[in-house]
Length: 97
View (cartoon, rainbow, N blue to C red):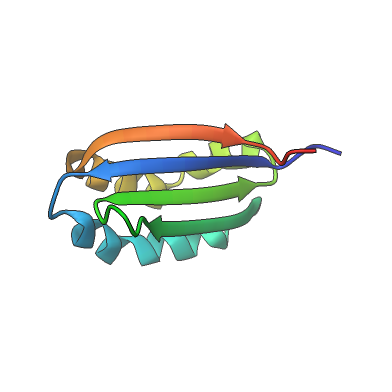
């Protein structure tokens, strides 16, 4: 059995831009959660830094995530938030034994 493809994305936002992102996020989050292969998706705001958003995602496999990246709404959201973030970190994770 293949392990799910899991990762954490951390966005460091330019000050004052968080609400712009969070206003657009619910639509894309809902559509993404409904996709075939999406096991879970959470969008969190760090309590110690409100300009840091963390997305924790779990997909059936890497191919399902690759297909997600091709969706129109995904591309539109990525293009939308690009000017508002200062840094982007992508970390794949797996459950410890």
